Image (cartoon, rainbow, N blue to C red; front, top):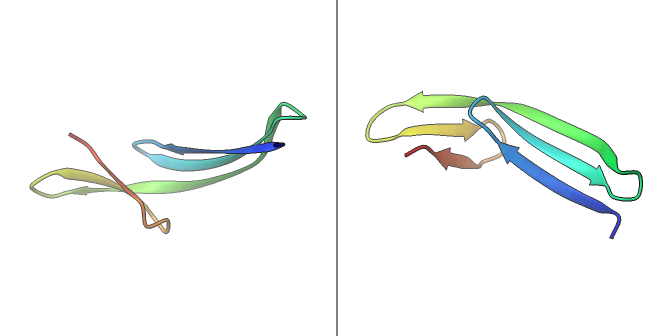
Length: 57
């Protein structure tokens, strides 16, 4: 195995990084801003265009 993909979903941005294990560095990174929907019953952070969401409790 040469590569590992890492997904980081934060409050303001979502990031997908492809890490090259042989070179020991990121070989590609993609970022997208997260949009906050501040409506009841819970506050939701969504990743635009990815179809994924993360609920804050």
